[in-house]
Image 1 (tube, rainbow over the protein chains, first blue to last red):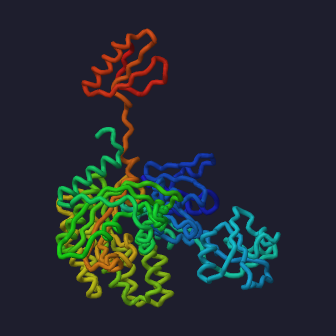
Image 2: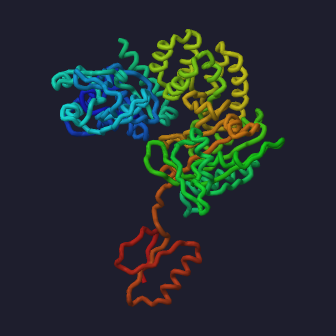
Image 3: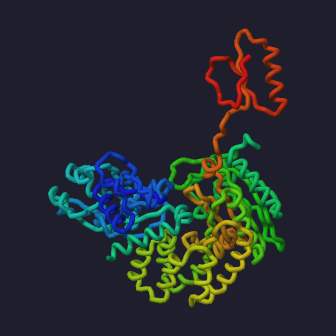
Length: 207
Length: 355
């Protein structure tokens, strides 16, 4: 049995559709109910639906053998897992954003609001820029509007939310997309099944 | 033995295995000078060290590692030292945010590490995994092969490549090779570090057929010898897998990591660390491994069906002498006995006696 952790929501739906097309379907997934685990015993696969930022935790600790996680989560939490495939879906960019007319004053400490403190810290420390990090859990775009921060570090998909709030991307830190990750111990004991799953998905993506 | 925790029981079993092979028991001090760890920070699994000031004001640490202490206390000599240990260490486990006391056992060879010794250490690593669980995997790689392949790559990019190899991130490695303009032949060899992995019986010949730099060929030859020795009479799986690559500032040559089914992270890791020896001013060669027993609790500790063999309950009216006699009779027969008042929450017992 392969245990797969999927992120709840749109990305999870898309990822499941890809896995189903690749020969790992689980009809119970399509039923509209509140269950959190779905099993297709005949082909030996069990899906869990978890919060997107928790997928890596399930995989790292072996509760799931594989999972679908955004590169943003992998960069932020650095879980000890294998990153087997770039699924090319859920594409977006990790960006620095701020008021359209923002001018950085290098004599001042830059105030950065973000949900991704580790990514933000690594980015600015590589530039030797001193920052004050403000860790928020949501509505990051609000921070520069009300003077909580100078800029934000956040995921930008279309840039629409930013534009509607008079903000714009100022610099791209790294492109983001969904990745297929695997637990390191599972890879040793269910290696053949995981490699086969990986190959099925890769073939389906190219088709 | 039955009342020992799983990690304690396993620690005794493994130490006995090492001592049967002539690895003499070694004891290190619980405390070590803090400075030792600060100078070799990157050698540690986590950089956090529990420190305190000793009575004379000297900054000391609760040891997070055993190898550094053993190396520190070993002098260069013509003889080879083989030691084994079982110690408690204090560190922050990966993915956690608090210090933990961890039972660790392992062995070290310091002096001359020849082909026989490499095979012996690898075989004992396989033997340790075999003792822990029926299904296990020992993943082995050789850093000299990796450094041979990385030779033409610019030094500043090598660490990034090693990180991608340890993630098995083929997409990422391809993208980086393209961005760096790495030549086709080197790029193909780098990809093989991810793709050519699995049971050594099938993957080693693939490596041996590849057109690799001379330094790699020599390493492959040593690798074959050690793997064949370790695989003799062993029931598990020995793989070649370069995702076990480690910090090249300390390690060189053979490195390995062990997994046991049922535990989500590695339980054993080790390798050649001649480079650490140089950094600590020693000219000897060295090799060893450690087994982390903290992960094994849930795997090995089956909760017993009963807490005691016999539960004796008594009331106000029970004759105390008869009670004592019944308890003594059972303990004399080798049973565990719990005596408690009737009506109190009972422990789980195999049988009960009401007096």
